[in-house]
Length: 157
Image 1 (tube, rainbow, N blue to C red):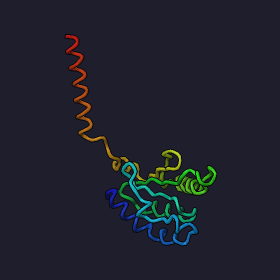
Image 2 (tube, rainbow, N blue to C red; image 1 turned 90 degrees about the vertical axis):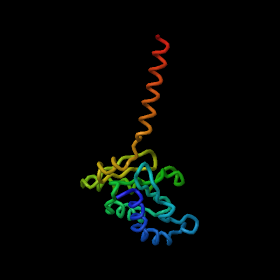
Image 3 (cartoon, rainbow, N blue to C red; image 1 turned 135 degrees about the horizontal axis):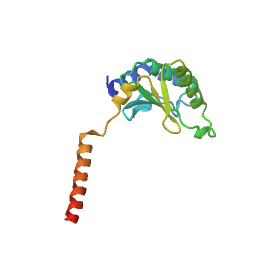
Image 4 (cartoon, rainbow, N blue to C red; image 1 turned 135 degrees about the vertical axis):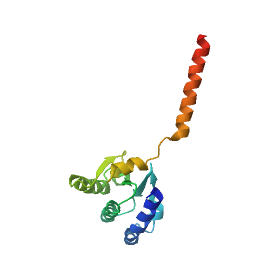
């Protein structure tokens, strides 16, 4: 399975969350939709939980964990709580839920900075999903190294 396939699966699986989010008080100004809140981040699906209630964010988290993604993991965007005085109830609830699942041996997670968390169910698949530097990059590195060596040899001799 590919990143594109995972994103399509999540879009389908998270449709009920999107439907329920329509009842949120702020939904008319800031609707949560898979088309606007799903993206890619370093080879993994990313789910932006902004504009969801804590309950719906936890539902989305459970769905994503249970989705058996081909990439082996995903990134969550929880935010930092900038609009709520620096304290994010959503982030706290998500981290608590992740810690509980980690303690049961179901997954691992690591912060990617303030407001972002990488969730890993299958480390080998996550590593494989990440884009590598590629052959072209390494060829350029080799050419630059050869040019530096040639310049040094030219000065010496």
